[in-house]
Figure 1 (cartoon, rainbow, N blue to C red):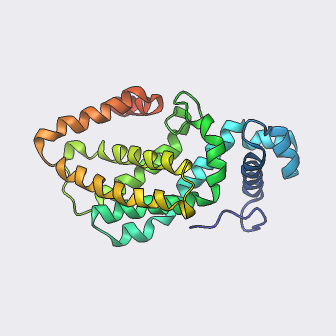
Figure 2 (tube, helix red, strand yellow):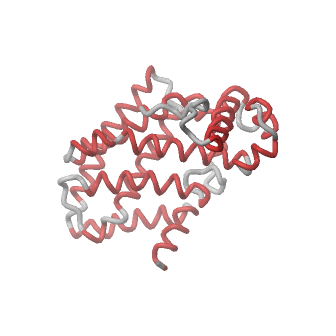
Length: 240
C-alpha cells in the first residue's frame, strides 16, 4: 500500500500540504465523532487553519469525502501495478485488483462503517454512483479497463466498453460486503474477492458467445438506467 501523504513533507507545495492536513484531520474526526456530528468549523480548528481556509480547499463536507474517494482511487491505481504488469490471466488480474483494494481500504474500515448510511443513498452526492463521484468512479473503472485489456482473454469489440463498468459494479458489491465484514483481517471479504474474480473471469469467457451478448448489454443498461451518475456518464459518452 502506498503511504498517505505526510502533511509535514516539505517536498510538497505548501498549498498541497494544507489540503492534505485538512483531509487527514477530517477523516480522523469523521472516524472519532461520526460524519454527521463533525462540522467544517471543528475540522478547521483541529487542523489549525481558519474556517475560510478550510472552505477554500473543500467547499463542504461532501467535497472532503470526494477527496477521500480520490485518494483511495489514486492509491489503488498505484497498488495494482505489480499485478497488472506481470499477470495476463484474467482471474489473477481481477483477484489482484480486488485484494489490493481491500489492502488500501483497510485503515478506513471503521470510518466506512459509520459513513455508509450517507453513501448508500444513490441520490446522495456521497454515493459512489453519483455525478459528484464521477472522477473517482472513472479512475476505478479505468483500472478494470486495464484489467481486461491486458489479459489474454478474448473480448468482443462491442463489449469492451461495458464490461469494465460491470466489473467495477462487482467490486462495489465486494465493498458493500466489506463494510459490514467483522472477520479477522476481513478474511471473509478476501475469500469473496477470490471467488468473485473467478466468477467474473467465467462471465467474460461466456460473453464471447454471440447469443449471450444481448444479456450482457441488458444487465449493463439496467444499472445505468437506475444509477443517476452512471446514466449521465453514458449519455455524455453517446453525445461525444
